[in-house]
Length: 179
Image (tube, rainbow, N blue to C red; front, side, top):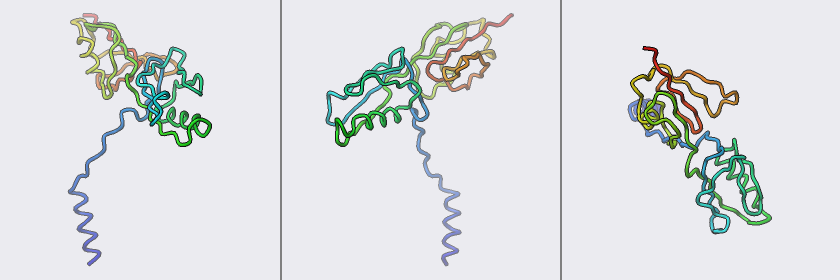
């Protein structure tokens, strides 16, 4: 009887699809210059900041802890750094959350109608990013788009397709066609 129940349960598991949780857009994302973050310390309004811009040097200034280098760290890592820094000297049990308020822009230049910086939104593909930049010009080579990925320490140009996942700080160049 138990074996029959297990077989029936296995068959049902194959038919019923459980909802998959949406991926956290900030998972794996590392902070960099130009991002704005929110630091909320529960019950401590003097330690809470609604919109803190990460400076060109990749640092923020925070009460009691001084200047903190946040470039290359995730929001969760920064949250843990703040907890460890404030506990136990300043707060007994700090409850802190760090979130990204505004991502740094990415850039589209070359054969698009409105070249320049574009506000990043999680989940953007290059196809959508080009639409935000006004779309291709008549001379645009739609198959030849180059990117310098912000995450690439070599800053090397690479050819990418229109389904490429855009990241903040990326620089795209849409080349022109010869005829």
